[in-house]
Amino acid sequence: TTPLIVASSHGRVDAVDRLIAAGAEVNAKSDDGWTPLFTAASGGHSEVVDRLLAARAAINAAAKNGATPLYMAAQKGHVAVMDRLMAAGADVESKYQDGTTPLIVASSHGRVDAVDRLIAAGAEVNAKSDDGWTPLFTAASGGHSEVVDRLLAARAAINAAAKNGATPLYMAAQKGHVAVMDRLMAAGADVESKYQDGTTPLIVA
Image 1 (cartoon, rainbow, N blue to C red):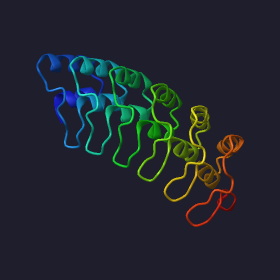
Image 2 (image 1 turned 90 degrees about the vertical axis):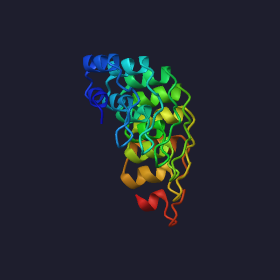
Image 3 (image 1 turned 90 degrees about the horizontal axis):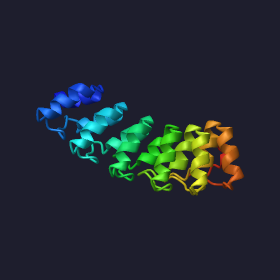
Image 4 (image 1 turned 60 degrees about the vertical axis):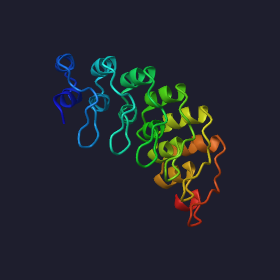
């Protein structure tokens, strides 16, 4: 970890300004592959993000686990940072090591504003992780009904199943998220969809 990485992670704008002016490497990486921009985005420090972008920080530089600055901002719901990164050309389809995209992770954490911005930026609403999880699947599993509304409005595939056969409705039923179940069934979700062991949403509920 360099002084610029740690100053960025704590949102110390004046320190960042001085370090950049002194020639600090803006794309230096920690052992985990974190750059100053990555730590600033993760912490929601939009002013620091501005400074680093102005200093030509690599916008899509990923950590060792595949996470990018935009992925971290989406996960934590830092929409001011997301706006800056996307305006500067951040890749909305970047993938974490498990194949999740910024929209999948924002959906899983119930970050409504982040989901709105990613959809508006053209993020793939039916992107799938390595396990076959879509944004709608993770939102339904987490009980995030507002996010489910946004994804359905954006024409998310309602019965898209994970590799194990579970659908968004199956996950909502398993976890007792009735508000999500109501939305999915009203939109035409298959109530007889089957998990890999043959169970249906009714059986698992």
